[in-house]
Image (cartoon, rainbow, N blue to C red):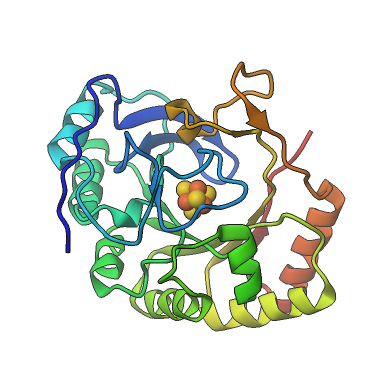
Length: 270
Ligand code: SF4
């Protein structure tokens, strides 16, 4: 297992925001990846643009003390509801994840959220590190391997059965709040809805969050894109993704909720 240490540039703070999250309120971001976007997926809608380093290999990207120092410069925190580990890629790729969550909780005394793409949940060390978090939002965009390849474009070693088995195992071990986060890119067929409901029944999350890629996607990596803060009027080259309508999203949420009686949330759009 590699432990390459790539220190962030001096201007690349590992702390960003707070950003307004429809799911979690005012969220202060902690970025355990930082300078080079790194992920085991390369999602077609990723707000970071094309992922710069595609890998499923864990390493230390940012020393824990760097995060502590960056966080201390932001104290006292004003109008922050939660602290979210996310940012420039997949946070569970960070080997020091458990330490980071621990110090962030100790310093901020706020609920800690981790947004993960679920690809590393097969790893017991990752599942163990995530147990310290108050909320884990695990991505599940695909109900078939074909869809996974088209939407999430994983690295070669990642496959859907392993992802589902990883989430299922994590659910059995995790007593915190588990949300399944799903990006809806097109109108789902009845078969897809049925498959999704079956999978959710197996995974037993506390909540489902369905979402739309409503923000422009930068074509070239910009650090500030990690907070989803690229405005539609931004000077950067961006791609606006075609979205399903709010009505379709709302109908899908109702259909899922009626079938399995688990809370389903989705963003209120203007
Ligand atoms: S999992 Fe997240 S960070 Fe990784 S490519 Fe997809 S949207 Fe981007």
